[in-house]
Image (cartoon, rainbow, N blue to C red; front, side, top):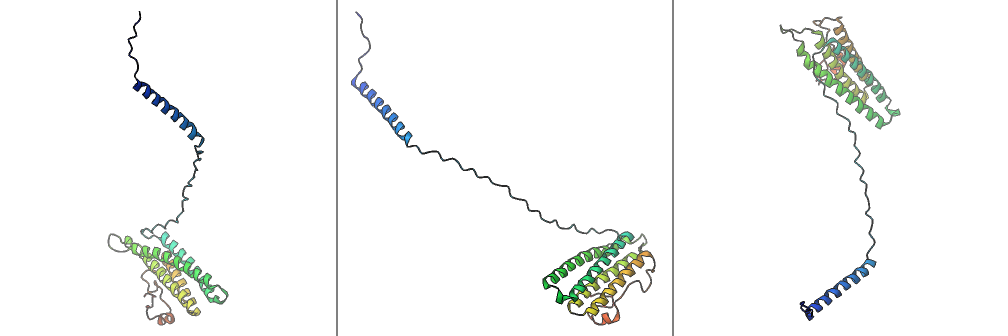
Length: 225
């Protein structure tokens, strides 16, 4: 005779089993019900960010480095001064014909000329300040004609400013006379470099004509303020 050693299951066991079974059935039904109501997945919108365009900024001009003046550099300065004189002559002609020119164009031309003249003066003043390089071991200048030539160019630049101001005031004769004085000073600078005029000559430096010097009490005969 076989004896069943397993204990009979109690009512509590059957009750727990039924509860678990009912819970699983409800969970399965809920999952099926919510699956039909599951919202559609919205695709993610892709945004492309373009790299920022680089803006090219005009580089500032390099500062003019001082160096010992030579005949070649002074001759180059003379050539630049002659170019500036020609530009000034054209500007004065434009101012003279102001009635036929637009004021805006005239103002722009004057502003461009002033900027060009300012750059030229900075370079020339730097060359003048560098003339101490020309001092020899004895303390005397090796090339005394070069500082005198640069001084003539400086006076020429000063008189070009006066020419433009005179033209703006309607004094066209004075403006043209200033141009002639500037050309004479520039030509004298070339003669000094070429050795056609001795540095010790009293005519080495060019001065303003008397009628221009007398009309500018704030300047001396050399055009200096």
